[in-house]
Amino acid sequence: MACSVVVLKEVPLFSLLDDEELAVLASQVELRKFTPRQRIFKIGDLSERAFIMVSGSVQVTTIDEDNQVVLLDMPSHGDVFGFASMLAQTPHQTEATAVEETECIEVDLHDITVLLRKKPDAGLDLMTVMGKQFHAAERLVRLRAARNPNDVIEEAETLGERVADIVASFGGSWTFIMAFAVVLAVYSAINVELGSKAWDPYPFILLNLFLSMLAAIQAPIIMMSQNRQDKKDRLRSELDFDVNRRAHAEIQGLAHRINMLHDKIDDVEELVRTPKAS
Image (cartoon, rainbow, N blue to C red):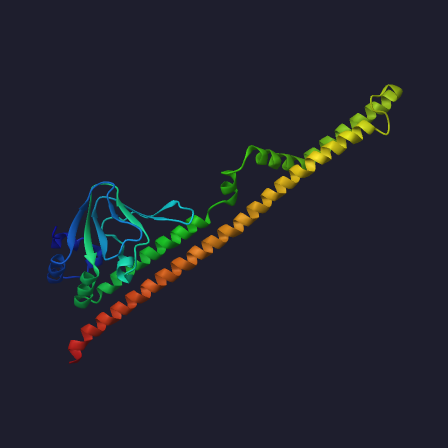
């Protein structure tokens, strides 16, 4: 479906174009309609085209290393999505799906080349689009960095592991020490006071047996809790490593795309200057 000049005028990316240039662009681009839940493009698709929101709603998502769907963006009117992959001619790293009845302007690399030849200043708008995508990646990294290792471990912990943590927490507190000291003092005082009638006369052999049994049970339970603490520390370091790796990959990819955009703008500027020089 052909796109009208009126629709293009409302797109910030084309705000610097005059009516004649908008008319040329309108004859090249297409207006596409998508039904609810229709996939516009998926991860791994060849990125020959980018899309500009006109109306409706679109979700741009990706899959992280935990195989979880992560919402990257919900473009509003005039926003561009799929642009970086189209410019770099690399497969899409994201998936775009229409949430409701949606209209988008479909733009390919040739359309952008024609636009830059006629209006080199529009390259600044393209840089703005790249900047928005860069900030979206930054927000994603901050979101993933906020994962709490304690919450991740609690999702898979068993009843025995929770009991071990409670026993270790209580056994290493002053409450336990003071209460245990009071029980020992009362137990010893009663048996001393009863003398020959005591059920556990001095040197309190039965008490020693109970204490040995308690230590034999308590020690492995505390070790279980310490092992869980080691898992938490290891998970914290793994999450930090994953966040750093994601940030490194995102920054490298965006830097590569921005460099390609600079190169294309420089090429267009050369084409614009060449006729003037001759």
